[in-house]
Length: 544
Image (cartoon, rainbow, N blue to C red; front, side, top):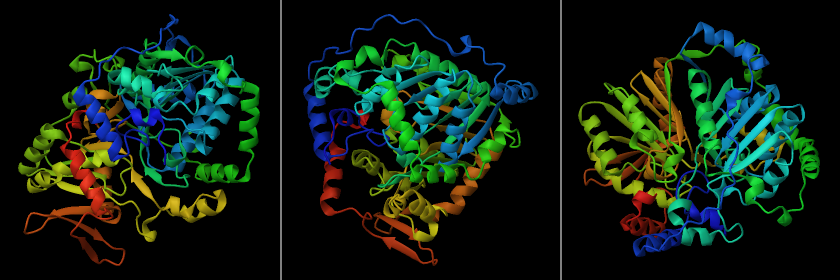
């Protein structure tokens, strides 16, 4: 499949988070080694008025009438509800858009022109029509296919769209890569969703089919968390910080309207027509069938209220000007309690580097159970990342760190219960629904703390991209995650072990109870193995 320049510009995380061919990685490494002279290609910014979410009065909205009494009962605490199920995750977004009365602030890395993207836009346009002020902030890396739609949306008096860290050469983005790679290689990877300044969603999900179990190709296994209270306020402040940043450009300033014939009314008509399709309606019915979110909005579902800390990168990180205390990983480490019994890490892209390897090894050597779940080679959508993760596996295993690698295709008995129904009613490929890739980013410390966010445990998230997450001091949630991993790792992941010759083996428990052992990396061809090895030698790990 051909890759667009903006896809090539990103190295790691998400679909299109990075280079997906060995050739591209090698070319990039050459450019880095040779030190291509760089100049700034950032477009000139027209001064923009500062806008802040809390300048809009939202205390009398329906959501506020639900949330405020709960906040008064739980001062300085955060209420949370974890969204594991992709259908519930979509239902939460649609319900909150439909419930919003004053404001919607949405910040994403990817928004695709597909079923999910269109469903969300349908509800957003309805919200804007009834007077809701919508601010949509998108990273520009994946905006090329959507920029005409963003331009049309921006024509609505209640919708403002900005592109973050934009490419200057809109149709020849490779030019920005050559001339300004240092900037272009850094992306806004944050995902946040805020309704009426009352309820926030953060996590790993973008607005695209594969995050909500409706892709014909494969599904991302991901997690979000719905937040109210103290943490939600911090997420709102973070959104404002990015919205008012000098790297956030109004779409109409960046995208030339003469290149696009689409206007708002035509876009609205197209989306309305699409919304009426029977397969779209069937999917919506499936997503909202449980009515969990609706019940919560009627105050029937109770949140757990805990102490929480929002950790997030400053926009200055994109400019290489952030202080260490403005980095998410620095904040996270400083808020984590020392593990006493267990550390569970779930990360789609896991590259610990030497420092992380030593930290985890030291914990494991201190009789603390350390488990890491990441993607297997076949499940990983970014082969380059797997190359740098793989070189740490043996040493981690030698030091008693437990490694698990997510299956690309679980046994039929372990698929979601509604897989066949989704395929039948929404005409989504059953093969695609049966293929998975891990995309979640979370960590549990003992039965104390849980981190959920957009942050992968890899150099790209640590040093290059901006991220956001929340650290919840929740024994209940930490215990639940630990137990879930106990119960499900054998169903959905290989367990890596060392044999007598210190070679890695991959063990998987079949549905009938039999244990199958692979002595070679599962579903990896010899030439892929060679390519991964060669890439692991390249001096580009810090750029991954």
